[in-house]
Image (cartoon, rainbow, N blue to C red):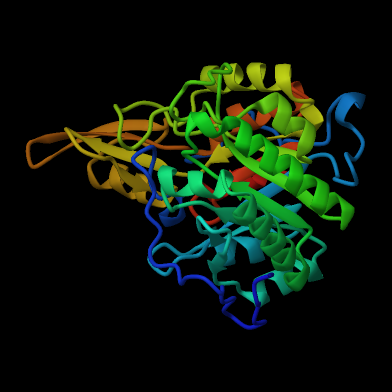
Length: 363
């Protein structure tokens, strides 16, 4: 039984109404978030300047894709304005609007005006469906044939009713023991979607090696998932996450290790490099506060620190704070890898929190 969709500002699921979405300790609620001066000698980056290996479309997907995760919460807006301003640069958007439950039902809200704008400018659209129910609850979905079938049916209805090009699964924190079940689910999803002419894309945690028993990445069999899905969007960020120790969000050396492993398992033409627009403010013990680029820049100015690099420290109430964030130069260091590794493109988490000057270098 497919979920019923009301074509207004609200897509109502037949199961549950989503409240505030809580991220696990592994990172922050990315939905709540955000580089500095243009580096001297920098030039515009052409993501289509690559070798013939990835020069053509893959299953109709264009080369040099510039994708943006789209979410515009009231307490951290910015995605809509950024979308409107850079329509000519973007290839597509991935709206972060929907959640799936353990029984395969989908809930969330959609904004038809955003999808209409995307359609008017020929942008690709992939409906992101995330899992925030928790590892044990979500395991019930993957291990229930009835729930899996219902989930696929509901996602197909979601895509058909709203005119999406396909789906994006951002399913994080899956238990390692459900590795096979997740792969099997994606294979079944892809079979159904491809039969109806739709795309299946995945947002996957970054890995530097296949570690089936790893509590965070063990469930993701890159090689098998890369065969089934049309695109793998590798979330190459949270190298140092909010619940851990201070450090770079995504250092170039670490991202290279991630890509080295990824393309050993997946054709580069199916890989999209996920890049972060945000930062973290660590202070002593506890979870770091998430920052947009503009928030990090304001903090640097407030405490007389230099924001010309993507790291600074400041003292507040006797407590040393360590801030790491992403600016234009740090993002360029990663974007430059796209052509070198012959990838399909980039996907920014998320529109509206990044250093806006990065758009001067994308085409």
